[in-house]
Length: 357
Ligand SMILES: C=CC1=C(C)c2cc3[nH]c(cc4nc(cc5[nH]c(cc1n2)c(C)c5CCC(=O)O)C(CCC(=O)O)=C4C)c(C)c3C=C
Ligand SMILES: [Fe+2]
Ligand SMILES: [Fe+2]
Image (cartoon, rainbow, N blue to C red):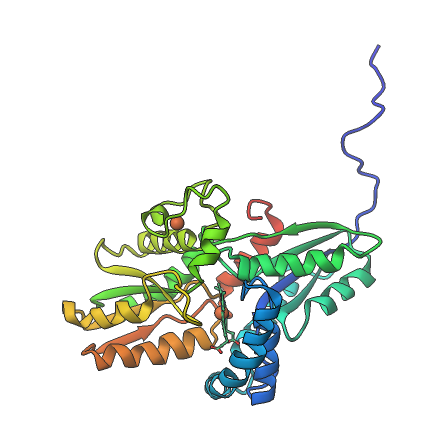
């Protein structure tokens, strides 16, 4: 006689509600006016995962030095990057929100854009989800490579809010997606467009930098990270090392684009303060290129999925100037994924497949 199944492993009769998809980028000021830029910098840099020093010195540094002195300079740069659609970082986030919602439909999914700093805020996005009584929330930070200062900070903020809810739904966090075939192909497609137009002497892969201290803190074994050749491969032991993930991103892109060994460099931009940041520094690398006879450069910025101050202005304009001052002749920035269909394909895949978490 067959024994009755007392506890079926799948309870198919339990109704399922919608899944909320929270798309989170870093944030941007509400306007390029100095007070809004100061407000943004204050919130951003007071995050203990970004300036990882004790709260009191951080407060004094941010409110007494960085925000007052940096805000007017940053505001000037924000005015340059601002378009009729506002900040490109936010605009492309809004496009992604709209397009992804259209792809997923409204029966099963609710898509919301949030910014880690400023608006639209993570608390507002999550409060909207809470009112809908969702079954699951999927959080997709817009950072291809994990860093405590970015992805980690988004996780902390989401967990802090949700931990106070009476009902906590299932939550899935995407951790990184640098090795997703659509991420690699997305940047490769953009690069090929420029490579078809002319030959380049060299290819630069410039990533946002990070203080070396933050990389060391991430090495829980205290034995793996030497901030050097340890980043030549991505293994289970250094999978969360931001520097190692950036080198891996370059390797994947170089392979997809067929760039020969010796014709490319991985480097790190946007230093803040006097502490050592991860090397090599982009500016140092660029200054050496013309001395080696390199006259033309195609520059990728694959730590960002949307164009922003760091890509359009820093890589596209400021580094171009440095290169030309040193004798370089042709500098071309490869724009970010922005509103390309393959970026929306990638987001759809991150929602539907559990392989990337
Ligand atoms: C790859 C993603 C990013 C990492 C890692 C990151 C770390 C990091 N950033 C700062 C300081 C600043 N970053 C600024 C702008 C900025 N940073 C990122 C992404 C990462 N930051 C983006 C997408 C942007 C652009 C936002 C936009 O609106 O366009 C700025 C503000 C601009 C300026 O004043 O220059 C600062 C400051 C630190 C200290 C840090 C790691 C510890
Ligand atoms: Fe930054
Ligand atoms: Fe490393």
